[in-house]
Image: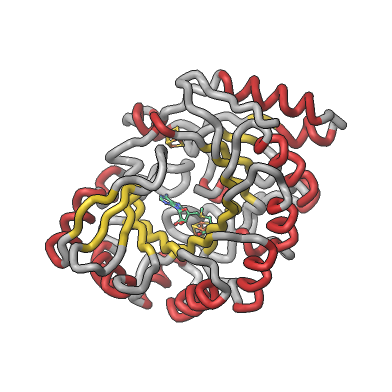
Length: 338
Ligand code: SAM
Ligand code: SF4
Ligand code: SF4
């Protein structure tokens, strides 16, 4: 039986984002800058990571409290071996009606995409910041070519992981010239391109408000070229605002978490690869579910801990962002996965 819980602002717990690793084969400048995430960076050791069994057990307890949507993320989730095994375990959980994956696409072969789909993955989001080779390689900072991400998108489509969504972080002076080429490329394809405002997640990406290309600027740029209109959200609390091209070119999304905060509808919890629960993307503290799990706690004890954490949740970082909050010691995006 499901026992829904609500937080201090009456927001239910609906989504769980599960990071399966803090490692990544990219060094995106806005997420894992090379200078910080170098050879001596203290990544988690294998035994610190939750096992698939531990993840599935926790996810089962979360679904019993109202979670219906699961998203696997990272770091780069596909660097975790046999991820489809975890997908299969999560698919079995009662109450789960959506399992999605966010990936940089670098390891998404056709075989992998088919294995994930066969295990029960429903949807996939692939990150791609530019079609321009020099720009993309400067952003992923490991020289990864655009063509391989485009091949990953084809693999996802061939495996039936539809709709495919593409996430593009826009950073001023870096890739705003790619907005129109990206829009053009994905128009009329059924693939939904979503533009994300550069966010002040963590403390290592040198975020400055001046570097944020606002949702309004992005929309104006597109609207001038191909007129668009707003579309009603699919459900309450949807993160991306939806728009469609008036000429029938399809749909785009905008994630305006900096300029148009959506904390009021935020129903998401985030579990790090080492079993720490964050109740906000900009979390400064976490709740240690791994210790509880490994101390031999039974489901009722874990459930009581989750209820205690969620009932007092009062996060609304994006609504109260200020010159001061930017410098708080916040968790890195590569730990909890956006
Ligand atoms: N490695 C996978 C990927 O890149 O898709 C999954 C993890 S990544 C942290 C999840 C998403 O967060 C990606 O779409 C990435 O572009 C986005 N992201 C990372 N840092 C960001 C930032 N500072 N502002 C906005 N989005 C960011
Ligand atoms: Fe890796 Fe994703 Fe972060 Fe880029 S955004 S460094 S691909 S985790
Ligand atoms: Fe949710 Fe925190 Fe983002 Fe607000 S700032 S929408 S509470 S994750």
